[in-house]
Length: 159
Length: 161
Image 1 (cartoon, rainbow over the protein chains, first blue to last red):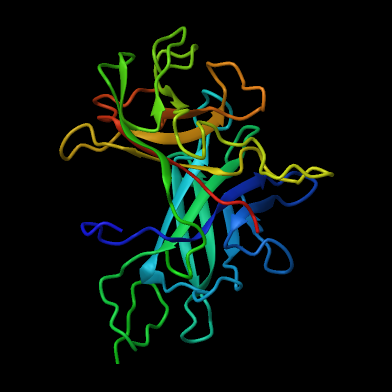
Image 2 (image 1 turned 180 degrees about the horizontal axis):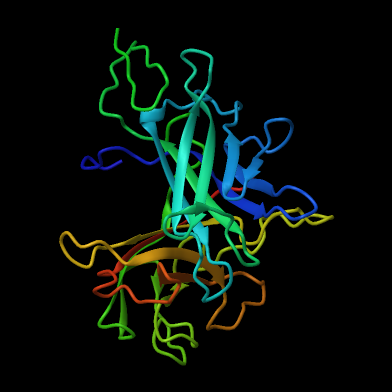
């Protein structure tokens, strides 16, 4: 890393979400291809509702099996539904869901994408329903050693 | 790279795309890609006058020789189940049209293929298409009042373990 860089981007999650919307015959399906998200079993990616997808961080990651919300940084890029066709997704956001076990931090994330103004949660349209996702651990400004950081949006408890 | 990082972000393309006017001449200031001629102008998709920008990956790149894979390697039997173009990652950031002025480009997306060039024999994808549109859905260039260019970064992600 160069000496002028503030903090490197070292993703703990990097991958591609593929979404099959819900139909009259059943709920939608979201699948993940990449690294850092559980892809099978009870914690596999879950289609919550249109435009809402729940992902579980991979407990197999070395060191950082969870992330403290203030340190979380994400990037979402929606793929165009087809060549030369703009996506209908105008709003993209992510929530860090804190594990109920104290001190664990975030083990799950929920992605919400929406159309329109005001935004209404909905799946990307077209044949190519894909979203690229990157999550990395940023620098929250305060990171002294041996400090017990308790999960919660924007909360850092220093005893 | 730290031991908790899944994969580094190591861009193969980094640059700024600007345009001389709405529907005008595109320029790319950066590395790893170039704009090639089409029926509707250099860097265009050959169909639309504005709002679609086609970056052709630089063949001089080490390792990733100007293409992304349509499916991940290795080719197996039966074929590995994977989504289309699972590896490339693209970040698109619009620059404000002016100080204190919000961008009107609300729809920013990317897709991969061979849009204005012949597909290579190996089936690889050599172009990244950036699609920009206003909130209402109309394709629009990143020129005021919409925006003052877009920053683009493309890198190779990682395959599933």
